Image (cartoon, rainbow, N blue to C red; front, side, top):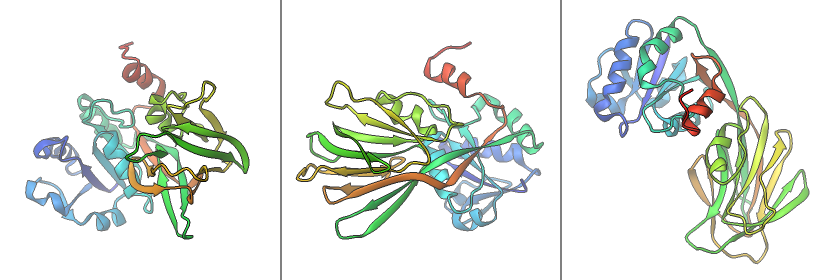
Length: 285
């Protein structure tokens, strides 16, 4: 890893003090790049250049913030495919690998080559509108259909490989990756899925049916969702909480496994279940 692009979160990292510390600990071990927009902070040991240029030459990316920062970086590296080492400055930090007390030890392992890269599956969504226009999205966590401004229930028809599953009368619907199963989907009552699996998880949001449950679908299948005809309640489609796009009864959303993956750098081995226990169950041992 000769060139590292550093992606800080200036809201969580006030004055970029944490970024400055990581840069100091990494000095002389790799070429460090930082987006030109942060040049005013005057961090020593880094070179400033536009993010697009940095991603053309970087071997890896440090996501310095939390899970939201890491998700944003995952979208940035879709075409260039660099692995991401996440540093947690947030509250939960379920995806980020490195806690603040582990920074020096984790950097030593990283620069010594003592790490593995976990490839996490992503989703690819195609939104076809009534005017035949198409939009595409990739996501690491989830694709979500949610209510717009109205308080009415949505009525969403869902199909898997063309076979009708159900009409979800609900506040919306989440299609999550195993990585995203511990995010919004879990909050909506969906199960936790081991991130090493290749699968898609369909979870209705506050369904108005006693028997509506989350459904686990093999990653090779195709999920299709459309609004019931004549249902005029406004809705939105988003990917990892980004790019909200109107979804109406003339829209068709098709979700498959993405050709892209997100590579997460692991310097502490596989510890998915211990992170579950510590961060989601609040247990120290």
